[in-house]
Image 1 (cartoon, chains in turn green, blue):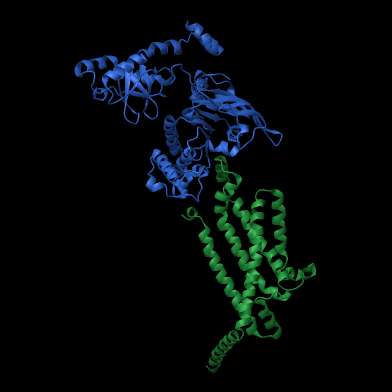
Image 2 (cartoon, rainbow over the protein chains, first blue to last red):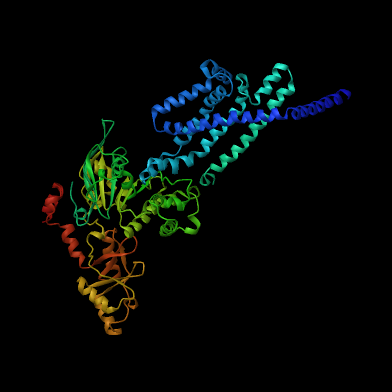
Length: 227
Length: 405
């Protein structure tokens, strides 16, 4: 009985002191959160700009298909921590820059793969009909392929974003900031609560982003595919 | 290639193949030196077993496939000089896969080419309503629906309408009804035939189904391994297949064995004037004189046959009621046969109804001619004892003719 009360009290104590930590570290937390969001937004944004066009070209050109999908696959097999650490000997220095580049390379594959799969998954009969009726190649892409592939491409973007929110924690190891800095300090000082201060917000951020992008995915799905 | 009178040109030549070949990857010959002409307003069927080059031939017309050699003329112009995109917009295209865009409503699907051509919203909406009404689907219900909500038959109806939306002169149809169940296919064939009677497009129609070819075609191009074996009317192909392969492809059960197995269309008279129900008797009489016909056919507002009237009974009516009364009030003879029916059916009808004449109508019930007792001697002389048969028919038939003489 006493043990149980002590246990619950211990939890209560822990929560109270964690809240205290949050309040004390408020400014650092907000800075870290903002930095973390940048660590996600910049690489994912750049990956979208690169991977969607390359994914589209890959559906039309066998060489691009071979090179791009192969490259992205290899990037994905390198362990994320190693990829980030590798940026330093590759001359990126330390700080945000190596983190951005590594996370960008990491975000490419899901978007590229889904763009490629989404576009090449559009029914061949539809493309034949569209071309046969007198659509230019660009019109086929814009009016037929992209709208129909949009949910698949969006799913790739969603996967990439959620993965990068998790992986961006490792940016702290090369001085890239973000929520990972709390975790790294916490590990060094063996302070669980500091680790949680980094881990909890990044997990919440991932969940929230997944939910929001899930909604966007639904929204870009053409009405006619839902019925 | 045997030129048939009905395929001979009085009309504009719309699609002409001049020695057209297509060789894929430098070795696989898909189409081999094909020549032939599709006339305006005709439905020509390309038929043959899989891999005979019929689809390749069709796709060369709208340049989805470019010929390796030879030239295709569209309206007497070398079609490789046209911009492919513009060329395709002047030709409707219907495919077996139907290919309705699932993310667009039925209305948007129908007007997709109109949209490319920059039509405004109201004009597109009006066109979509007119077209869908034409196949008996309610615009208020269907235009807002998505393709997935329609049955296969309804989807392909929309596929055909989509091809007609900007009123192209040419329609290319690649096994359009191949994926439908037999009942629906039959129904859509009838609807297309009916539509064709009204819109008179030049249609190139690919199929591997001989029944469909015989039913739909004004002309049939029979292909095998890239070569055009025979290009003729269905009747001629049935009567006189060029070689063993065609005969086998047609199948013995469809072959015309008796010379009396000819459709009414071939022996009907087509100089009969067409009158509206409220035209006066006087107008009718004059029209008959002008056309040198003993009969008039009377049609309703939609051009469908109400009945026929002979010069004699018209004269009686004039004596009875005066020259100004409307012809619609007269007793009309409404016996009719369809133009593709066998002449024996027409003969039976003549005997059964004890009349001198019956009307011949097309699939849409519009009058196209008459079949009279006077046609009978003509049938006997031309079809049973053809005088110049020896010149065109094969040796076996020749000896038969000699025997009978």
